[in-house]
Amino acid sequence: MPPPFERHVFVCTNRRPDGNPKGCCATKGGEEVRAAFKAELDKRGLKRTMRANAAGCVDTCAFGVSVVVYPEGTWYGGVKVEDVPTIVEEHLVQGRPVERLLMPFNKKAER
Image (cartoon, rainbow, N blue to C red; front, top):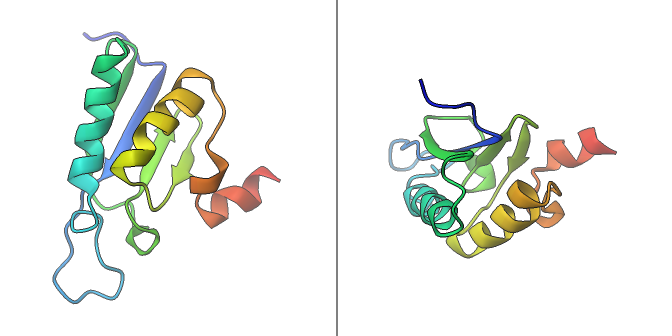
């Protein structure tokens, strides 16, 4: 059995039908974001303690590529490949959520 992870990152890679008003994380770059998380964790030697996985629909595609970090339950929206190193450093390593990427409901809950 693998060891428990300090943090677990779920990246939505769900694909909705073309024309869906919410869009979908897959066409907004979800698969690329997931690959970037995996590469960044590997590059920093963190893949034994932190994990990045693809997730099915988390029903927040309207916010752009959705990422959820556990155990905190922190939700990020509109995540792009270039945001990944910042999330890894600031949140996963230093424990500080990246405010500019938090989903609106997450911001309200933390006040």
